[in-house]
Length: 544
Image 1 (cartoon, rainbow, N blue to C red):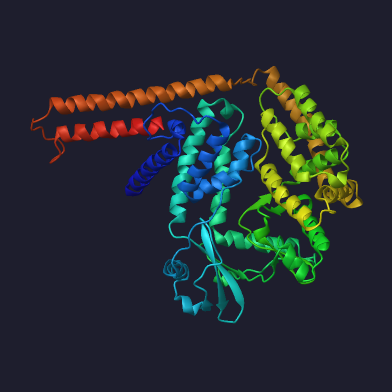
Image 2 (cartoon, rainbow, N blue to C red):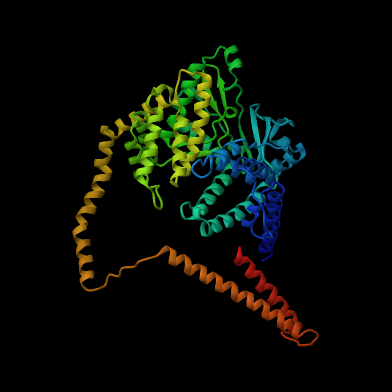
């Protein structure tokens, strides 16, 4: 029970803090959606751009969870207008570094031993300091140079509280906003929370790094630093240090005699291989996470954010790239229909018309000059316009493609990601018709379908017999009626506890001063007071 009350008061305090920050930045009207915040009338900012800037500043002040939320939303071009996306892309995940003593304390608590028994040297000056962790150079007792990523103290407590609050707000939005009928905000918060918890658990990031090492082991021009499991814990990650040149430092690359065109080709090829072949890609390939090494090799670091694509989604993405390269709006719309992401009333004629406008936009442009990230962004804007539910992996991929395409064009303007993607997509199409695919179908899929087909007459006979005997019942569900019923049940429950609280409070004042003993030392007035407070508390919790 003490844990419940601690969590309740912690969340109540955080609700108030969120409302205060929103009010401070001129977003008080958004506080009407925040529980425990007193409703009041606010005038929204005069323009969307002003509102977007205020939102970015508020998210920055609210801390790591909301900064990550803003970065997550910056990938959802299908959810927010363009001015919000542009502002949220400016969110900086950086904080002043913590004192070395606090970082040392975290490491020693995680390993249960002094710092000098783990590292022969630990640099007190951090390489970088973000909202979740900061990174330091160090040297193992064996002499190997490493980098140590240390999670900030009390981050997980704040994250858990904020995720619980966001979950309640998402459920409220699903029930009370028109967008809630289209987008599963609750699922989105769960997905965001899962991703954020993974990012905060460095043992998972170490597993991501090892997965990339295994998937890309056959590429000689790619380097993934190895992790040290014996020096890794949920709050501490130890990895091999990468000593290279940032891929965006063109002057240093030229001075080192590296081939920028070859680097760009290797970088784009590996990323597209991750997406279309492995289905496991780096979710944050910005220049700070990429380095050039001798031999025109590309090193990747920071594997906290990754994207996972199912085989069917990889196939759909390949078909979208092929449809784009062939300038076929019908192929693109057909792929969208196959993805089963349309919800509600969708005007397919208007959808295809918008896709055809995109086709005309890129019709006269050679494929080698098509900016793939811009094309994907345009498709997501069409999705926003038609309320199409885009998988989160697709939105993350669109942002990652933006980083990849921009960096490739910066390194070597003659190389285009769209051309490479189209080539890999065609290879995937050939793979569908390969003898290996046919052999897999004959050995695994075909026996299953034959067995299902052989059982079909027997199952059909059972269904017909049940139908003849009247044993089959047809159930019809009306989502709106179910939602109304749940709302009425919730309203009646609130009224019950509200009336109970007022009744107990009335009896408390009626028995005031009367010495009525009940259950030993407990008096009846005291029990009535406790009962009224408990009823009001339950009513308030149900109201959230």
